[in-house]
Length: 104
Image 1 (cartoon, one colour):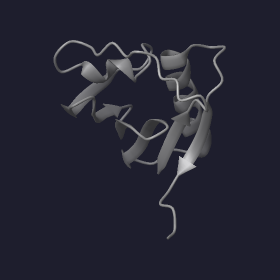
Image 2 (cartoon, helix red, strand yellow):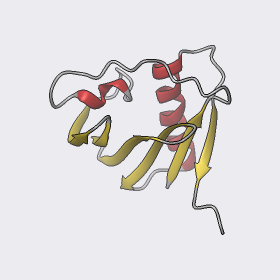
Image 3 (tube, rainbow, N blue to C red):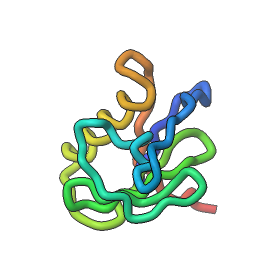
């Protein structure tokens, strides 16, 4: 399942990538422990609570994709809200979408 976090004004705060092998900490809230599986050019995969998540940039915001594991919609929503607050803060409005391929 793929999600997008989008500020309709196109605003994404400057992200402070973590130390080597922890670069994805800019996406993952501090209260989540994770193991970084890979990282390249500002995106990558991290294992959070036994689930593999891919973090990347989209045309309009930040993408988060569940690569491996099963979560409920409520668990995914909580994780995405925590990511939103980690990146944009509590008061900033960001829309969360379930993303898919646009039909041609």
